[in-house]
Picture 1: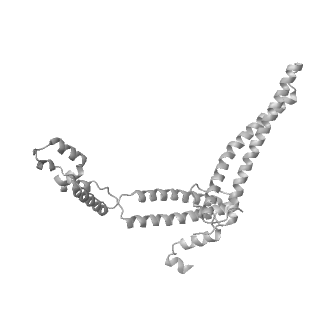
Picture 2 (picture 1 turned 135 degrees about the vertical axis):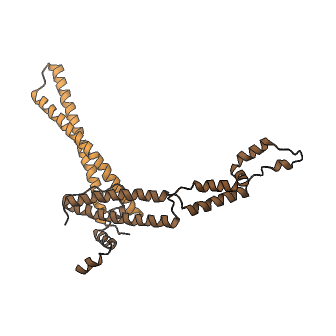
Picture 3 (picture 1 turned 180 degrees about the horizontal axis):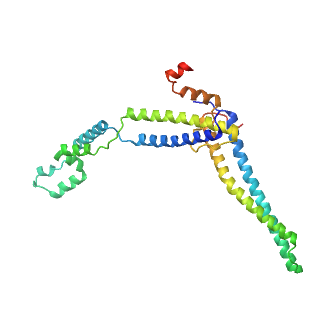
Length: 179
Length: 107
């Protein structure tokens, strides 16, 4: 049986780690997409802009002929990306690729990261609640953390203990042999 | 994921109700002390105006005690208000969760 002081220390440690997991979750959620996905998007955007570009030079074939600088400028500023896909398709693509943010995640990586964080969060929250219930019985009701999972707060203690035991990593082979 | 333990739900409900009752007691005590203080002072003013008498020593002692009581009640209220906010917020969250989970929360 742990002392109240040890339980409190462990609760405080769990809360610090939960805060870190919350920050990690937020970072994973808002992380940019991976480079490959970003390049696919760039190519789609450029292809669409090229396909739907304004005709910047149509006036050249008008009956009056001649080059209308005003008409060119108006169409160019109204559809700059379309114009760039005509004038400098490689340059605009390369520039866009150069601006891809590093540290991106594929959707699979993002989902795996979030799942790992969520599993660690649940494990820590269960341990925190079990420690708090120990403190509840020894020193009186302890304040619960704002944002604590209501499912865990309301869970019967036997279910929390069972869940905590399931989540425990298997003991090393040597420890199992001596147990 | 987990089932809901009615005993725990009711404990949170009881704690919220107890926090509300404690704050109400402090408030009621404070109101009663204020009223008694006002009445004691009014009596003192009437005595002074009608009879020119000095405050009765017992009244002065009474007023000093009421002032001390008021300070204690004010300190209690300052301490109990956040406790009530905490207990209410927590009970609100878990009651809403239990309700959403289809649990009968009116017990």
